[in-house]
Image 1 (tube, rainbow, N blue to C red):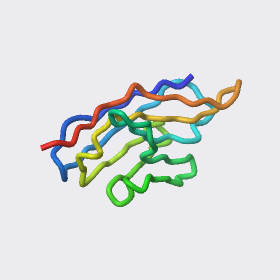
Image 2 (cartoon, helix red, strand yellow; image 1 turned 90 degrees about the vertical axis):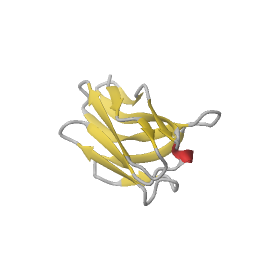
Image 3 (spheres, one colour; image 1 turned 45 degrees about the vertical axis):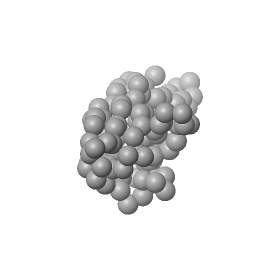
Image 4 (tube, rainbow, N blue to C red; image 1 turned 180 degrees about the horizontal axis):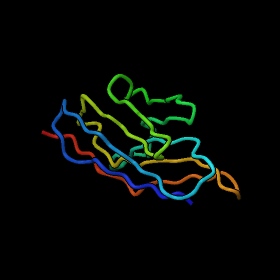
Length: 119
């Protein structure tokens, strides 16, 4: 099993920046995908950005041009640099990982970190 711990959330003014980090612990054979989802009050959880082992990144349209995902494979850590933040980016951001262990492929989620964009 892989455990995910997020950090870096907080309160920021519109137009500001935040950097989220997520560290994975455990002993998977390989973590295929790491990334971020978010869930705003009253809404469904949605994709923000993910990155595969080969470096291919996938962004939600709302994140393109403002957010950048990066991954440190040696440390099983994923980062999300968020710039030009808007009030509509306010949500709980969840780290996600898809990985393989001897018994099969699994998904894990972090506990979430709150991001609030407000003046």
